[in-house]
Length: 441
Ligand code: IFM
Image (cartoon, rainbow, N blue to C red; front, side, top):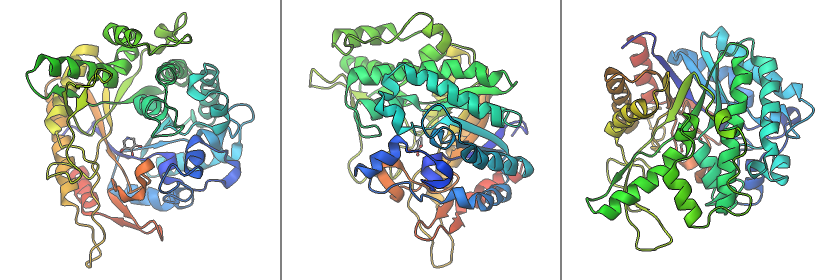
């Protein structure tokens, strides 16, 4: 195992921080989503990391991670989305970064992990091109304060989720349900990435974007399944990877969306040099990988594909999110990405498994299934490296159990168990296993 390979753990602001109103924080679309009853539980307290961050850094230090990926809440920095900077909100990240550096842990902050200021949503959110300018303003404010110490940045986390779950399916904040909104949001998110990269690189930092993926395979040899799988790949993966790596939006998807009337008068939102800006060279690609999917055709002419899903009680080999364990598909996908896009460097910015094992009578959390999952995916990552893919790091999702968005606190991804009633942290067996792995290097 090469020493230069970075091992870390990841979290995000809304999922762990709590402290909803502390130090002048503004309202985000997730605060609002919880308030209007769209979530089983809110992130108002979450893991109370805002107050317990010293303890959490100590746990990371004991774990021996090289790096920590967290996200910054836009609403702490600019409570009104733009305009006056809230220095008290930035103070929190300032302390966190210093604490990490003191502990020898490299910070990998993400600027946007889905928590748009509600005031910007009220003006159209990501469907409004002006939000791109607001994001650049936010990036500049953060870079001014932390850019002297942070050397690795991630602009966005999982634009597909923000654009499609938030604007097409409406199951995530802000809860919109429109194709034109989803397509406009995806474009503006990517454009904001493209414009933020040079701002961060100006300080000499390395910058990437964390794209999620669902590698797809046809469920059968049926040509309809093969076509459906290709379409799913375009919808879920290529729509983001292609423009980031300078290929523009995929022609087959543009045609399919046009043919189906998914652009209204305002779409496509692409203007002038947008595609060049989105394709700005990045220093690394972040890849979030959890599972892959078998895809079959649909009998409904309005639906282009049907993911083959397990039943309500997934069998062994699936996590409690209902996601199949397919580590070999991670290797294959990394090899595919390398051939297709030649990224300078790749980090697995998220990978992990939800299993609900709790604290037993012996005071420990025996989460062997998570250990098996992580071991298989770390091996799959190194297999890709052996096949020439420049993978330079791996972050476990997640450092600790946290708010799994609309699934609430019941889905547990952490290396550290969190009792959400008391905030008590208990390192799981997987934490001890990961520590052994890191110390054996
Ligand atoms: O918890 C999420 C995270 O916020 C983004 N990536 C997937 C994780 C598990 O669903």
